[in-house]
Image 1 (cartoon, rainbow, N blue to C red):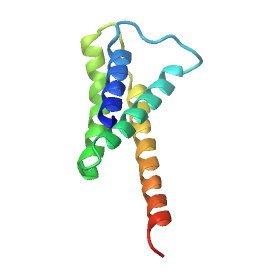
Image 2 (tube, helix red, strand yellow):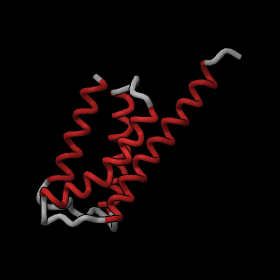
Image 3 (cartoon, helix red, strand yellow):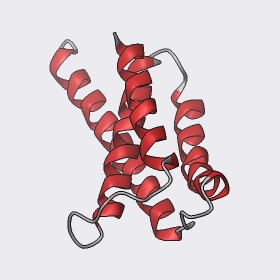
Length: 115
């Protein structure tokens, strides 16, 4: 089930990134918010789908793919512009997911470890 959720998240992200036209502006800078949420969600579902993957490998790979996907978006869809701010939003989404993952790990240890 976790891997299915991961694949669904990848499909939604790919659709959003590689469609010919950018998403409509729902509010000022809504595109940046969508990047933040998409990459945060992708990061969390990746961690859930691959729980045995070492964190020292998984998180850097997520950080590397964030700017690469933004660049690839421009290469595959020349109408779409490469945006350093989109890259920053991608990286922030991954960072928020990492912080959430660390916090839940600390809480789990505190609540479920013997006193």
